[in-house]
Image 1: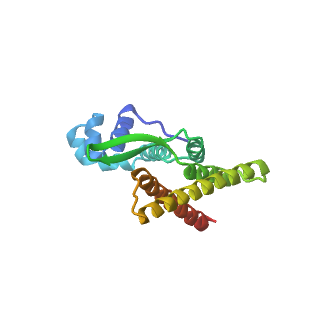
Image 2 (image 1 turned 45 degrees about the horizontal axis):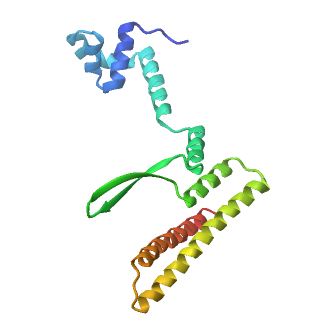
Image 3 (image 1 turned 180 degrees about the vertical axis):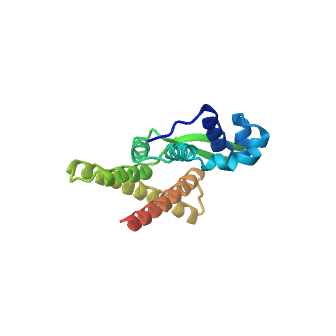
Length: 188
């Protein structure tokens, strides 16, 4: 059976939750300074007040922690490309912030994480994941070809700035693919 708190006791408990200071909470709740000085610690020992504080703290904690539904919703937004991330770019003119959706690898990872939570033998889903992974491998292969062509041109003394930039992008893509593969291997 819950014991009903007086309005003053409830104010004390609410103020204590905010500040963690029993003396100050007692004053804010309307108790005299003398009473607060002598009795604030006893207020915390009151079963009703202690129970109220514990319940409120549990409520506050549960609201701050992501539950499973929230986690799956976030993964779904990532997989659909709805979740944006901030990208910071630095140029000689200054630093710029922009928003971009998750890359293909991140989206595939999000889909895999969702599917881990909903196991089943859905051949269509497996085929779609295989296709998406194949698309990543094809993009990586194309990037390697461009990188190789740029290397050949550089070796011949003909440096094309566009191919050089493409090669750098290709190198970054290949590195990301290798890192993705390494992380996927570790997870499996």
